[in-house]
Image 1 (tube, rainbow, N blue to C red):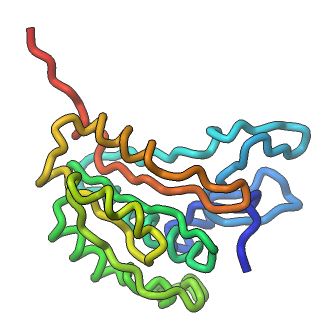
Image 2 (image 1 turned 60 degrees about the vertical axis):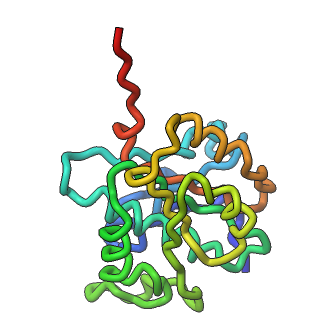
Length: 204
């Protein structure tokens, strides 16, 4: 059964972490970071669509931002796999290389989202979710991946090894080619790791 678009959330698949996101309304309960739909109204407050459309993880090197981001990508696709139109999920990396990403993907069981990997909790897996592949793409091949987003794959775009030249321009083109999801459908997910890799250095 598809989830209502008003109650969609971004989850990491780590129950103790997802549980830290609390509903401001005591009559509603959810875990994860809620994605608010356009003009959603709660308690007389109207939230614009961009109010919860972006999440930024900040911290020094080595604290686990990339690990959490990979969890997010896997979980998001797994929770929406029963949708008629699967969302496109891209992990664009200017820092994390493919070998380390694949090692994290395997070690944390992100290819098997239906498995409960948390020893201190039960039911953290996504029931009946199929295996999810981390599929490596270059900027030159990404156009073909967009047509294949109905498959259970997170597209790993490795800009650390294969720059597009104008990486900001590449991201803009990538986003512009995605179809606009229907109001009742899940939004596409784009993970950027890390934003400082897109800095442009201009000389005089």
